[in-house]
Every structure is written in structure tokens, then in C-alpha cells.
Length: 430
Image (cartoon, rainbow, N blue to C red):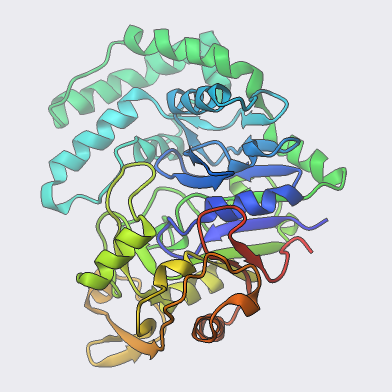
């Protein structure tokens, strides 16, 4: 049975949550493989709005097992709040439908405080981090001083690890960044209690996934953020601290590359990004305002207004190559209705030369200017469309041109926020 990886092709916020929710009906297991609660998925199901930061949206489907992989950094307080909110809405959550890798790194209070203090210290040069402690937690993971879920649920191990690392964190907070230090007790008391609540969910997720595949079940892997926020391949240093690309599913979930059969890239019909960093197609005019207002472009996690611009096919083509995309899902196509013309960025111009790929260096990327191709727009409302033939001719031509420029077939088109407001041209699991 095929397994599918869902990845963002831009700078995140492409609408991955809705597509994952749509595909979950055909997957026995849904796995989140990287990132933390610096990401958010907003879903509309049966007229109800759900916002997820850590728990896979598959939790809304009875009979689906949701897993948090070892590549995730997890804030236990946020995680438990999500569980409590779901249960308050009548959705049962427990070991029968949610498991947490014993190797998942734990975000500690000092990670959040370090994150915010460093951003303040950078002033105008700040990255635009969410301040959730994601980067500092990944630093500790790589520095071999992180605290994992296996430690959190073992009181003796947790006390020993905290005693080892806290003096260093307090020194940095107090002496270097001028912030408040922590006492061990103010961390131990709440975190040991959270560890007790989480212990029934902790498991060897890698082994669980191997067994599920052996039993013939489909697996669906979802990353957070998008390709161009990847720590290695994104617009460094304006990136996240992990690998959202499809290859990250292997290391972040504990599976081999041969287990990844299909890679579906989510492409928002225009481009957005949050925080700093170069953005060649950004619209700082009424077009940008239209995209923000009609697309409700405010972060699920931070509430920040997203920067908006025309669809950048240079960005998408990079994602096609880096992820090995086998198909695309185009989201928020309905937001482009009434705009005329609609534009596609087909290349960049930098220092008088045309280039079809993204530069690696920030100074060169900052100098890039978008080369646009214009297509006729459409005035029709798309939200009632359920077949490709229901879309206006100009809209279909737009999709065809996106397909041609990206070199990958479009398999799903989203024409509204609701689960049912989707056109499935080809099932990625087929």
C-alpha cells in the first residue's frame, strides 16, 4: 500500500492541514515528522473551526492513529491544552488514537525565554521567530544536551538532566541577555505533572510505523512550515530550525526512504510568508491587501498578518526538485477570483541577467526582481465547483499554466476552506 508525504512548497501556510484532513480517510496512520508549535493548521469541518499546532488533523477521523515523530520538538503544555480543547468538544483523545515518540525533544521554559530575549537583542535584524522556543530546543538537540520525552516521563532522569543543563541556561539568560533566571523547582513541579499525564501516550513510534506497514496500512506523513523555511535549503537565515522537506520524514519519523512512495506538494494559488526575509513577488499595494483580506491571511499561531504576493513558480520549481514531488494540490484558488489580470512569476532578473533558479545567498536573492507572465482573470465565485469542468475557462487555463511551469501534475484543487470544497483530480493513494 502506498505511503504519502505532504509538504509545503512555499514558506509555509499553504493549507496543508486541509489537504491532510482530506486524505486522512485513506490513511490508517498520520505522522507529524518535524517542527513544533510554531506552526498551525486551521480546518473547517461541518461548519466548525479547528486550529491545530502539534496534533495531526487526522485526530478528527475515528479509527485513525496520529503519531508525533522524533523529529518534532514538543511543548508539553501546548500539547496538553490541545488535547483538553478537543475533549471539551467531544473528541476522545488517548493511547487508542494518539502516540508520542519517546525520542521527541521537549521544549522547556528556558527555551522560550532564550528565544524571546535573543530576538529583542537583535533589534532591527531579528529573524521574525514566533518566540515559541523552537530554535533553542533544536540547538540543544544537536548539542546533545536536550531533554527527550523518555526523560520527562522518568522523574529521576528528568531531575538529573535539568540539574545538568539549567546552570548554563541561567548564565546565558542572566549574564548575556539580561533576563531572569529559573529555579529548578519552578520547572520541576509543572513538568513532572505534565510528564505523568503524557506517559500513557509515549511509545516507540518508529516500531509502530514499521508494524503498520507490515500489516498493509497506508501512512500519511505531514510536515510543518514549507520547503523554503528548511534549515538547509531555505532562504537562510530566515528559516525554521528543522527540515520540512520530504526527506525529513525519514529522519523525523524513523523510517527508511523506500517507505515514501508519493510526495504531494501543497501550492497556495498565490504566495505568502511571515516574518523577515526576501520575497520577490510581494505586493505592497491593493492587490496585497485583497489577498490578505479575502484569504484571511493571519497566522494561526501568532495572529500576525502575512506578507502576500503573486504565485512564484521559481519557488515552486525548487520545491519540486528538493522534494521529488509526484503531484501538487493547489489551495485557496477562490481568493484570486475578481482579480484581472492574474500574474505568475516565471523567472527572476538579477543584475541584468535572467535566472530560473533561486540563489543561495541572501544578498543576491534580495536583488532578484520577479519576471511576470500575465493571464486573464475570472470574476466567478469558485466555491461551488466540485469538478474541473465547473471552473471558468480562464481559471482552468491558470491551473494548466501552473502545471506546465512546475512540471508536475495537479491532483487536488481547493476552492474554499471547507472539507467538501475540494476537487480531487487524482487520488495520491491510488
